[in-house]
Image 1 (tube, rainbow, N blue to C red):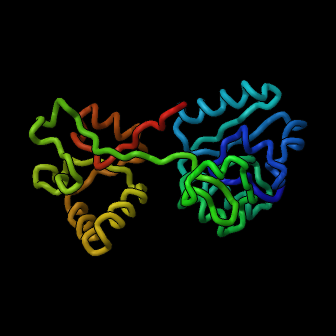
Image 2: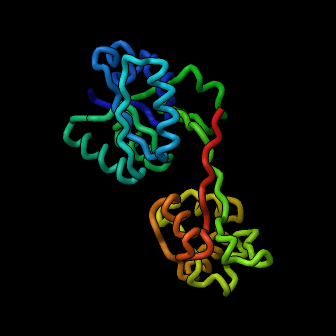
Image 3: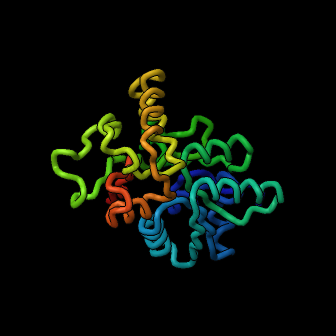
Length: 230
């Protein structure tokens, strides 16, 4: 196996593709297993895996969950060793772009891709984005009075929130999104001012949510909402 299966793809579609070594259903069936590298949360990953195994009971999915950054490093190490252990990978766009640039992905052009927005599809056929992440400001309703609840990101710059904010240190997408929305100059000015708020950095939205609920810090710069399911 020379390449890992393409980025962010639905498993039941992926294994029917005749394109790519790891994506050939005929080759997956004799092995009886699919190794799934993903940065998805447990509930999202389990939801997809259970549906897949119900449809294809002769294939067992073995998920390997980690952050997108750790998954990226793992795959690059496997690539250097010329021994890929994973079959499918679903991680964030920045990391998937690096894998594509390094030649660690197999091309995959799903028949379902036509149902997704053009900007969600890799122009070279290396994958399709599955969902958008909705970010919200999180707060502890017992610690934050109703009249002080931050309603805009600019509200987080108020002096009352200095030393009172929590955030994930690797949330690049919100950083880029606000720069795009505000323009480069105003966007960078906002982030520079927010950096002066003495943010408490913790890794992972599940942990951050728990810490907000526990009162370690009353407000989270952003949390991601669970992906809706059909």
